[in-house]
Length: 305
Image 1: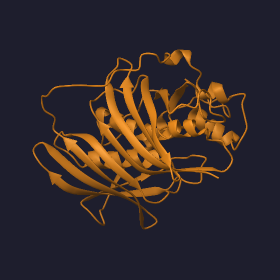
Image 2: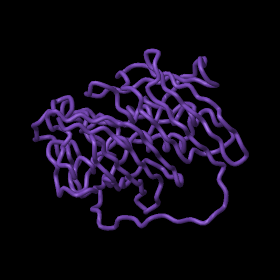
Image 3: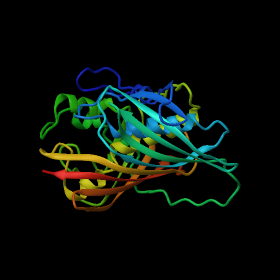
C-alpha cells in the first residue's frame, strides 16, 4: 500500500466509496432523489468523476428488477463545489422487459450542474467479440507508482497538496506507460498511452449497491482522471504547466461485461481529436486476464494559456 508523500499515512480507496454513498431524500423534480458529497481535491472545483459515479449510483439504485447498466451519456453543465452536497434527481423514463432508461440531473446551489441518460439491460444470449489486449505493455509491478515518481520531483504549478493528491488522494494506484504527464510529458509525444490502475486497498461495501454495481461505479469514477491525458501528451501539455486549464464537457461510457475491480486493470487510451480549445479522448478497460470491461469517450476543454 502506498503512503502519501506529505503524511506517510497509507493511501486508501475510501475516497471513492465515500463519494458513491448516497442518501435518499424527497424528490423535488422527478421520481426519486438522492444526495451525495463531492470529495476533497486541490483544484478550484470538484473532480468530474465524482459526478459521473454518483449519478451512476443513483440510476442503479432506481432499477430494482435485476437489469445492469450498459451505457451512460453525460454533460457537465457547471463546476461543482468541493466537499458540498449534490442533489441527484432520477426520472424513470421507461421500464421494459429487456431495457430500462433513466435520466439523472445533479443540482447544487439551486442550479443544474450535471445531466445524464443511463440505460439498463436484462441481458440475453448472443455472440461475443472484444478487441485484442495490448500485449507489449509492461507489467504493473515493474512500473513506478505515482508516489515514487513524484517523491523527489517538483516544478510547474505542483504544490505539496497536489503532489499528495496525485500520489495517494485519488483512491487508486495509477502507473503510466510510457510515463506520466504530471510535470513534463514523460515519453514520446504520441497520441496514445496506457495506465495500469487498481484500488489502494479492498473496496468497501456501499449501502444500496451490490458489489457488482459498486465495481461498475468505480470504473465510472476513475475513468475521468486520465482520459484527456493522451490529448495532453500529443500536445506536449503536462498537468503542471502554468496557465493550463482543463474541464470535462461531455462523457459517454459503455459497460460490456462485468468484472471485479479489485485487481490491476489496464486502461488503454487514445487521443481522437484536438482543435478549437477542445480535445477528445477514448479509453478501454481490460482486466489482467484480457477481458474488455468498458469503453469511455470524453471531450474536454483544454486551454494552454
